[in-house]
Image (cartoon, rainbow, N blue to C red; front, side, top):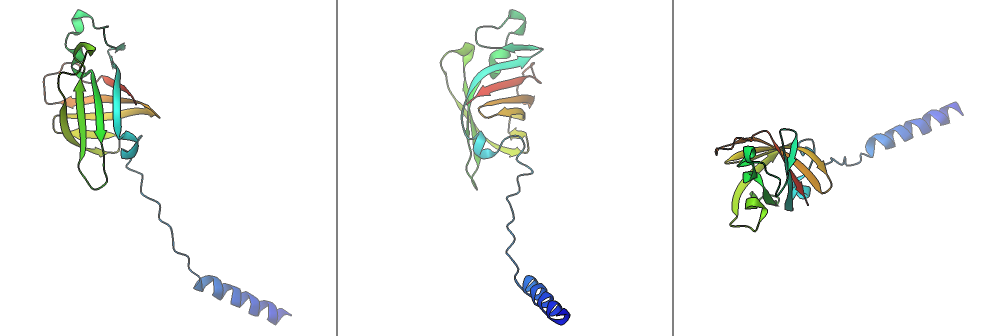
Length: 152
């Protein structure tokens, strides 16, 4: 009986060793940050700009914050795998109709979106609402460090 037990144990171990399963390697999402490119894709509507403890919206600008509306933009992210990613700004000058739109390619690393003329950091994302901090720009904008609030 003891020899039969050892024989069966040996056969079981040999079977387990010889039957290797293909390991499923999950997609590396460690650098996606708070939002994936797929979630980022699409049209985002401007909802407010948080600066100096105040959330500025269309029609709420005080004279001492003149120029803050320069970031009151709807944004369209176009993302495709193995293709350049594009971000289109649709400025809402004093929250009216669009005068024009600008398109710029971008890269996303973690929560950072790098464009040729600005760097944004995604600081919050909740299925349809996103906040991005304006880290730097190459144009003269005195309200750096504020957060653009967008809704999808």
